[in-house]
Amino acid sequence: MADADRYLTSRLHGLGATIFAEMSALADRTASINLGQGFPDTDGPMEVAEAAIAAIRAGHNQYPPGLGIAELRRSIAEHQQRFYGLTYDPDTEILVTTGATEAIAASLLALCDDGDEVVTFEPYYDSYAACIAMAGAHRRVVTLRAPDYGFDPDALRAAITPKTRLVLLNSPHNPTGKVFDRAELELIAEICVEHDLLAITDEVYEHLVFDGEHIPLASLPGMRERTVTISSAGKTFSFTGWKIGWVCAAPGLVAAVRVVKQYLTYATGAPFQHAIAGALLLDDSYYSAFTDDLRLKRDLLCTGLADVGFEVFEPSGTYFVTVDIRPLGTADGTAFCLDLPERCGVVAIPNVVFYDDIDEGRPLVRFAFCKRMEVLAEAVTRMKALRT
Image (cartoon, rainbow, N blue to C red; front, side):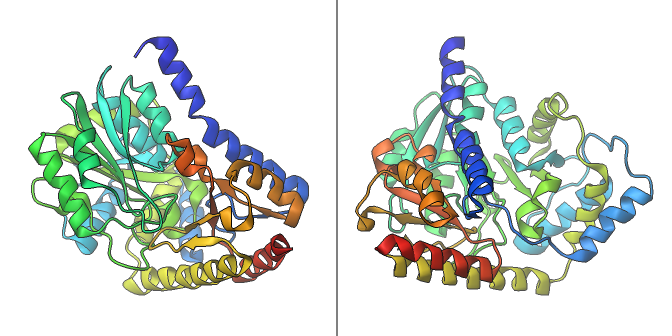
């Protein structure tokens, strides 16, 4: 890709970030309920917060090791074994990053060369397009289609070319809430093995699955040594501002990603690493209660949105729900979202910013339900004005 084309592509796919900024500003200016941005309105476990404070007071305030502190790397390895039966060496196969976003950027920059192709699914998290472009690679997308957000296996196979370097997969999937099932993952794994492709998997919503199960792609035959598994603490423990993420992969892949990471941030929030090392060891009751709470919030918002008149595509995971706005007599999701704060004091995100296929994404809007129950109930009450 020529430098000018790469720059343009990167700028165009900053549209998602621009929309997020505009929606946040609208929420502040209009005192709206912000269901656009994916962050909770309550903090995570107090014991985890206290552990961060204790780490600060104990003097863990300077650069930590570039790989991440040993205690956290051991906790990540234990987490992968505990939940998925995956074994990783904490000294050679785990890298702590500044959130999953840095992990994704560093992985794409490390593993792609100019002219390589990256196959991913749309709608996609907006940083994917920008990072692929910055790596000098090209994206090829396979569309997930409502209402169940399945994909055409033939379309996936057709997306693979001799230039394909890797598949970038997000499951549970933002913004749709889709959880890829075993058959879909086995097909992706089969294609990766057949064409000798790498895989990068964004699994930050791994503990937010309401229907089905989360199956790491790395756990499937032939995938352990070719998969870069990425996750983070922000979504699971409701401390999104701490930006503690990680990469799990074979030693050679981790080494390549680390080379890039050291020129991005070098090291990541030392006291927060100590806190998350303990958080990952919380017992099963924490994880189940966390998921159960978000399931109730999902059900409340989905029921309310359907009552308002939207066509609701109930998510199987994450804390986002997508709706089709056409039953309300409009089809432009961006215009709808820009008007929504003034009309009824609620903020949402137009899904079109996550699509290459503009027509597919235009009538779709995303709401976040990681908010207090009373906030969600008030948002639904406000949106009932859309029926008149």
